[in-house]
Length: 153
Image 1 (cartoon, rainbow, N blue to C red):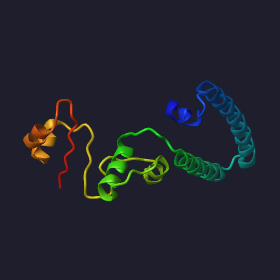
Image 2: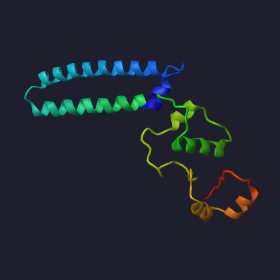
Image 3: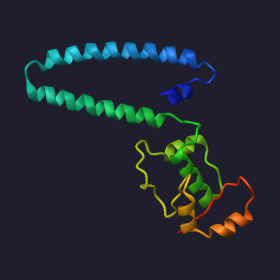
Image 4: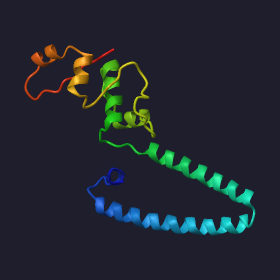
């Protein structure tokens, strides 16, 4: 939640944005309660109408949350964004902008379900790296404190 709030705090006004977010949340909860009371009054004793209203509002809620997540363009790099950046760099030798990465990023990320033939592992163990590449030659070519990048097919 803090990362999303920081996304909206463009002028070092994190506290102001947090306070406004809290006020908006209270307002939305009040409006939601009023709509809930109205829906309960309209539905009455009908179980089928209650299930239909529940389904409609849950679907609407999930749809709105997905749209809200897609609208946010974060400038930080996590594992999924790093994989998107690196795969694009390996194929096109160009760096994507944060907006381009956000457009390619999945809202629900399932590890191992990335598209493409190249598997990118951040923070892989030395054992896994040794199994996928010629580790001794990589280490001889580098310097102390280096980062090793290896590709396995």
